[in-house]
Length: 313
Image (cartoon, rainbow, N blue to C red; front, top):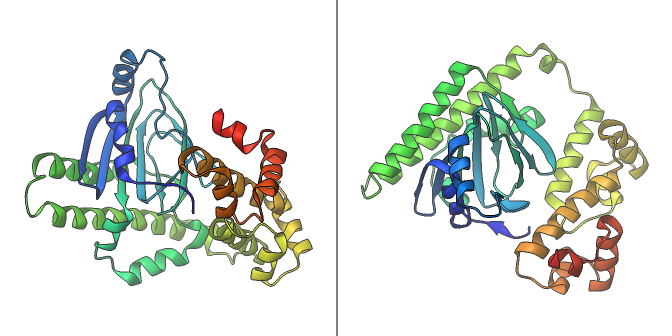
């Protein structure tokens, strides 16, 4: 699934942070404000900030909470704009790219937790199963506006994690405390999501079959795009015709089903070419192309440059 970023590769965020802490390779907390960005820029002769350096696939979950200002990012190709009292959550393996930050009045918190550490957290599987069944209405990979009171509640969880690792990093209890706090944070967010769905009268209406097909298609593309690029494959998974799938995707997203698939493949290819350390032939194999030549033609047709030109850019 491409070059995956672990938490060690995110420690460069410390130079942009007002507050920063991490516990080994288990989790990382950072708070980014206008003051911290200005301070970093004073020591950067290029006057340029690269927060995550292009689209990267994260090995773990992330919680991004904006209290003031504006943050623009893409999560699995979906543009997300966080403003005051907005939160976004990503699941393991999500592709994330920081696009822009408003440097005046910014105050945002970020929490990254490794996949391995998530396995050690004792979640109630019944609760998580219910959250999964919420489908596209859930927060995972999306943005949710919350109230000021809810934002203050979540801030308390972030602060507790930060203080725990910053002051008690050597304690034998630190890891256990972190597990409990992250579990509580996750349940708190799920409660906020569930409350909104319950209060939304439209959510009580049966979802149309077309909408279900669109949501399931997007999920399948996210899961299989590194191996499968044909509309027929995804239509087969949904037990509908390729023609009908193409029609409903075009009506729903404004893009053809092929365009959606290609967008995922190209993003994955760019990630591999720039960050994986693999050569072009290896990338072609990773993305299930029959040979380097066919991959090169595909990539150039969609991006306007060859894989080697992109690597050098």
